[in-house]
Structures are given as structure tokens and as C-alpha cells.
Length: 261
Image 1: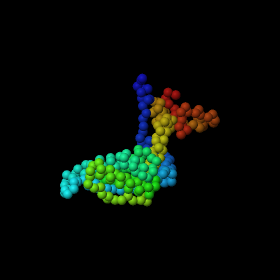
Image 2: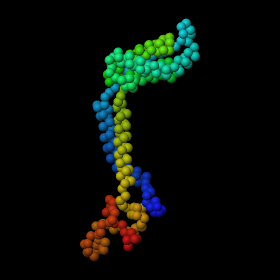
Image 3: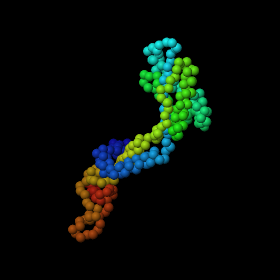
Image 4: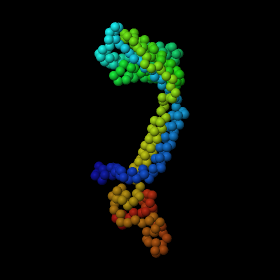
């Protein structure tokens, strides 16, 4: 492959010219962002199913009877919160809750609707349950807490599992988040429209100005003649139209190169 062929294969991108393309077609980017943002808003607000989340929390006390709580007890309890989380989401606990409420749901799907979190440097464990019915979400959160408390007491032989907060009935859906959906949809519309404009700019190799002749063809231009003006001079009265250029862009001009003279 020759050096000239290698140079022709290289695509030069003028960032300033690309930016001007975006500025020139700003209205396309704005409209695309608005359309995608409104579509995402309508989908999240009126089409997608809403899920409600109810949260309850417990405090797990692990000590022997008639003994004072030491710093080691607190540190050990903090380290075991991950064990508590695994027990809460265990198959034994969730299958029992599903059987009590007659839920026709697999363990994996039920487990995906439950989240367990622990606050830093505490023994407080929060249990959250999501469901399309806010009342059922509250009942399931309480049921998971009660069954898990019994299971933790039996496995770890803890002294007590105390309730910090009862589950509440949520008023607002936890998902989908309308604001996040709208913002993401708007940004997606802006990105896609900008990508299309950039792709069309890079794929457009038509000659528009005299500099393009030297850039794409490697030839130097001597002058420019309007397309509708006769090549042999309009002053002589000859009405013969000028020959059309070999490669033209938006501006109807013909470029006369040295090699063509």
C-alpha cells in the first residue's frame, strides 16, 4: 500500500467544524431530547407498573443472661449483621412467608423483591419488601421480620431480637422513579440525535468549498465559476450552459484545477 493510499484511508475530523454542525442543528437535538424525555415520562408515570416498598427494622442483642454487655459484644454483633442478612433471605424464611400468604411465586423472584441493609457500626437490620399492593408490602415485611427473628434466635442462640420500627404502608411508589426516567430519556434523546448528526457529517464527502478540493482530491484550484454562468463568457451572448461539476455540494460552484487546464 502506497503512502498516498494510506493518507486517503485516514479520516480527519475537524472538531471545530463538527461543533459547528451541532450548533447549526441545535433545534434537532432539542426536539429529540424533548420527545424522548416526554416519552420516558409518560411510560414511567402511566404505563409501567408501580411498586411500593415497606421497611421494618430490628435490633439483635447477642449476650448471655445476667452478664453485662461489653464492647466485644457490640463489635461481634456488628460483624454478624451479614450473617443475619443471609438468614433473613434464606429459603426457609421466604418459603414459609410465601406459604402463609398463599403467594404463587418462586423463591428467586421473592428474594429479588426483598432487600436487607445494615447501618454502619450498629446492630440494626432493616428489611424492605416491594410489591404492587402497598398493604401487601407492609404485611410481607412484618411477616418476614417475624419469621426471620425466630430463625435467628434458633440458629445463633441470641438473647433477643427487638423491633425498632414496624413496617409502614407506603403512600408513594418506590419505582419507577419518574424523575430519573425523564432525565435519562432526555439525555438519551440528545445523545442519539448528536450521534446521528456526527455520523452524517463524517459520511458526507461532497465538495462544498475550494479547500475541500485540495483536501479530498489533492489538487490546487485556480478559481471558482458559478454553475449557471457560461464557461466561454456571458458577455459574448453565448447562452450555452456551463458543464456541471463532477462533484458538488450545497453550493453550486465549479472548481477549476490546474490539471484540468
